[in-house]
Every structure is written in C-alpha cells, then in structure tokens.
Image (tube, rainbow, N blue to C red; front, side):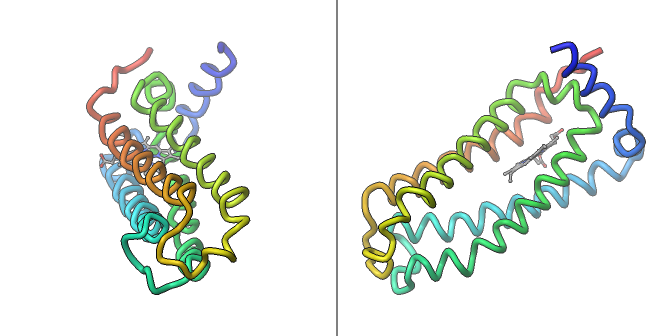
Amino acid sequence: MERLDWLLHWLKETSFATAIRENASLFPWLESVHVLAVAVVIGTIALIELRLIGVTSLNRPVSRVLKDVLPVTWGGFGLATLSGFLLFSSNAPTYAHNTFFLMKAAMLAAAGLNAFAFHTFTARSLPRWDTAASTPVQAKLSGVLSLVMWVGIVACGRWVGFTLVPTP
Ligand code: HEM
C-alpha cells in the first residue's frame, strides 16, 4: 500500500501531471477530449448492444455490425484511456481515494469481462444466429448488462468531480 501511495505521488509530481494541474486550460481541454472519446465509445457500443437485444439494425448480420463498429469503439477507447490517464495523473492520490473513481474502475473491468465472455463463449455459436433478428438469451443478457454498466461508468465519472476530497 505504501508503495502504491509512493507511485501515485510520484505520478502527480511528473512534469506532465504538474503542467495539467497548474495550467488553467489543459485540464478542461483534456476533459473535453475525454468526453468526446467517451461519447464515441458509448455510442458505438450502444449500436452493438441494441442489435444484440433486438431493437435496431435487425436486417444486418450481427457479425457485420461488430466488424463495422468495433474498430471505432477501440479507437475511442484508446483515446478515452489516454486522456483519462492524463487527467488522473494531475491529482493521482486524490482520485485513487475517491469511491466513485474506484467504482468506475471496477465497472470498467466488469464491462471488459462481459465483452470478453461474449466474444469467447456466446459468439462461438454466432454463425447459427448471425442473421436472425432475435438473438439467444445469453446474447441479449450480455447486451443489457453492458448498457447498464456503461451508464454506471458515465454516472460514476460525473460524480467524481463533485466528491473529491484533497489528500495530503
Ligand atoms: C471509456 C471509458 C471511460 C468512460 C465512459 C469515462 C467517463 C467519464 C465521464 C463521464 C467523466 C466526467 C466528465 C465531466 O464531468 O465533464 C470522466 C471524467 C474523468 N475520467 Fe473517465 N471515463 C473512462 C475512462 C477513464 C479512464 C481509463 C481513466 C483513468 C485512467 C479516467 C479518468 C477520469 C478522470 C480523472 C476524470 C476527471 C474527474 C473530475 O475531476 O471531474 N476515465 N470520465
């Protein structure tokens, strides 16, 4: 734990973290990039989940939707992670002790596991239901779970800024 605290303080004192913390416009610019990247991630994930749940793109094979949309999702996710890390670095010890930040991190991990389980197990039988409007119950469940988790991630992300308690 002491080692982690040391690492968080070291990160906060790096030149880029100090610049983000002390410059009046760097943090808002980075947060703008973060929000735009987050919008891309959630928007594209919603396209996939709504197809799985059976709401939109019902005339398109699931594999086609995945192939078209996932590269954009990954691009957005990379940008969200990079901008999020830079925002985090500016006050790493404070963020790391914030309950909503920790909940957001836990839900990000859970959303990742859910996506991994879908691609590894549920999508094994994809050729059988690829073009069907109605997908198997596991696929629907994975879609609903994913949407709920992403809403939770966004809500926790918004809450962070209102609940920060500075740490020494
Ligand atoms: C794609 C995944 C992510 C989503 C959906 C997400 C969502 C959000 C949202 C909605 C906000 C609030 C923006 C605002 O109030 O204007 C936010 C802020 C923030 N995010 Fe993320 N985020 C993601 C990934 C990350 C990652 C990976 C990190 C850290 C490594 C991170 C760190 C932060 C920080 C430090 C803030 C600023 C909190 C503040 O002081 O207000 N985010 N995020």
